[in-house]
Image 1 (cartoon, rainbow, N blue to C red):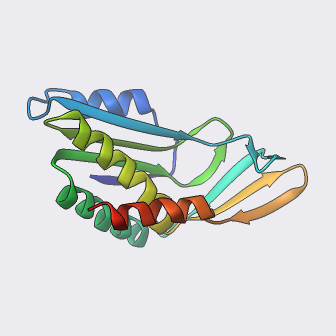
Image 2 (tube, rainbow, N blue to C red):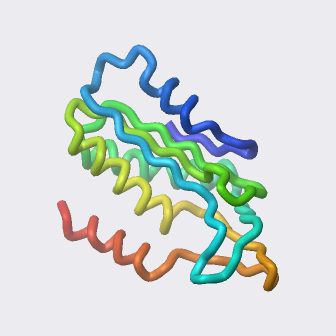
Length: 151
């Protein structure tokens, strides 16, 4: 399941909800991304993410479907913030449930790599030196290439 949130997310509550009553999996792996206070040595005081909810969710759902087809997962949950975020605030929560741990780890890793480069978000960092728009980094694109060769 994919969700966009325009208000704070609580990773602990999301994980508890995802695990509640689960009998279909022996492993749940989760990842929480936080807004950074520095990027490439520059101070960041705020992060703003713009998205078109219907479009962004559709692209993220395609990525989720790819992960479900590629890995033996029982369930996936991804919640991504948009709007204005404070430093240290959770920006994304991703969880995967699988019968065995390896599939859950790989699915979460795959989802994060794909979301980072393919999900349509427009990101602006604000800091003491002004604002700057940011894009996926070269190492983010290298991570995508890794999945193309790892079938």
